[in-house]
Length: 191
Image (cartoon, rainbow, N blue to C red; front, top):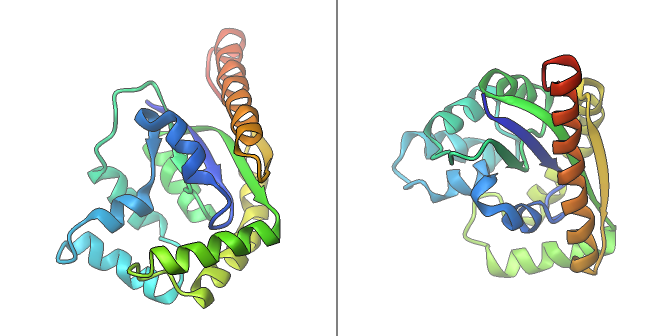
């Protein structure tokens, strides 16, 4: 069973940019869903969620994971998933989550990123200011529930200086993998 580290945070907190540092290990279900042809039944199902500004159900996450071209790496980064408890349970049934990294970003930086997105990616169904703000609010409602079920939770404040954030992120990844390896040696399992 593949072990995964989930990178979570509100929209535009920098999850994808950091996950791209480990491109071969990274899974972004939202981008994958957007890459599906508009006539694809899975894409149509995702569109219903995007149009309402809602997060994917656990069942839809499982369907996406079953179709996702997974790499052969021993561990993976989940970019932006899970976003709610239903998704956590779905992912746990697919592979084990060994840690969460929650990204936080200042509101002023977030607003700049939203403005940029609205001018560069307005073709997406979920790229309206109202829907983006709703997704941010939904995230903060759900994150407390996620913390309650997680055994390994780290928080990273994403600064304007990407190099500093990148360095801290790489240290967190190494520490999570190190803790997993220590648990395997001590307890005989990775969680």
